Length: 423
Ligand code: GDP
Ligand code: IMO
Ligand code: MG
Image (cartoon, rainbow, N blue to C red; front, side):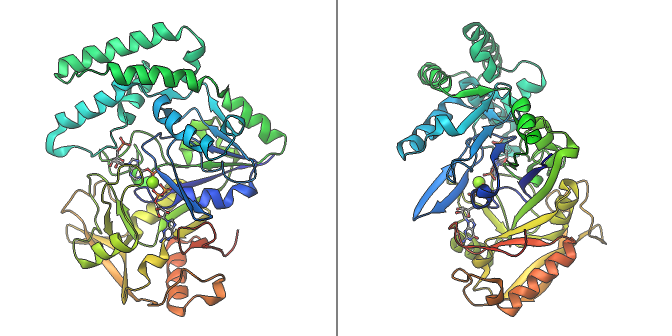
């Protein structure tokens, strides 16, 4: 039986997952999303075109591969319809390529209102969510009040009205109820559009395909430091973004997991609030943001930038059981005379390379190792043998520190700007 490979983010999201899933797609039969929802923004570039995917897996552009939205995902029919129609207009036969799990939970218009209400009640300690209703939808799932895609086929009008009325009462009690009738009408239209897609019992579908020898790549969303259990809680998302999330979010047994591709940027970014030990507030930080175009793919928000944090990265490698690393956006550091990497934290005067319980602002002092920059453009290179020595040395250091090989190095946003070292 084939194993299921997983590709996921090791930092705070936006590592470049979409690009690499697209590059790896021809090697697999099925590409599946297992958690998260339209809080994700996965960017792909090829043939001078750029696409941003939110709920749809990044395997839809190559070789007519099958794509699945798994049970662990939360799906907003309205945002899905906007995304899907744009793809259909660009000539993709999405209704043929995409299957959706009946067990995926639906994001309702009132979930978005609750997301905004929760944030405003938190005041200064707000999380800076994407406002897409992610937290309230997963809350309903766990508290056994959720509405699922499969409910569209079973007494939907009643189930929807019941869930909506519950939300309305909550919003009223928070003093946050506003008129959502227009949004609701659009959402209900989008629900009809969703029914034009193949709804499946994806756990059966995936396991059947595996036993027939088909191969599956799971596409993570967000990143390990945003994981609900192991991320910088409470400044996290509401799902398990780690490898274990792929088991739960698709119905794949742990022993069926094969390679785990852990993807990271050669530096580090974060959107929204929350601690970020290596964050830069100086010229180096703004240089990374400018050169790396570090603005949210969906929200356009400015991403906070900093040096790579190897303490957090080593932790992420451990939690996920990463077998192969993928380093992105190395080209963004081309012009830096010195590259820094955080190799340990100083906490209360003690030095550690073990990721602690809390990295709350002000408690952690990063300790850096410095490397000479390569100061030459990488983006046009086509083979590893062309790498400048300083860059090769940096890769070697990271591999030794993380005790894991770097299998792919990305040197630009385009599909072709990808150097496979070993797979
Ligand atoms: P994802 O959410 O993990 O899929 O990542 P995003 O799409 O949100 O953010 C990654 C951004 O970096 C996108 O704008 C990509 O086009 C871009 N990108 C990906 N790989 C590279 C790279 O190697 N170099 C540069 N300069 N940009 C890249
Ligand atoms: P991709 O898949 C970066 C962040 C938000 C916020 C926190 C909680 O593109 O890497 P949520 O809306 O999930 O309740 O927000 O998580 N966040 C992301 N940051 N990339 C993402 O996805 C993110 N999805 C959520 O900014 O801090
Ligand atoms: Mg993104």
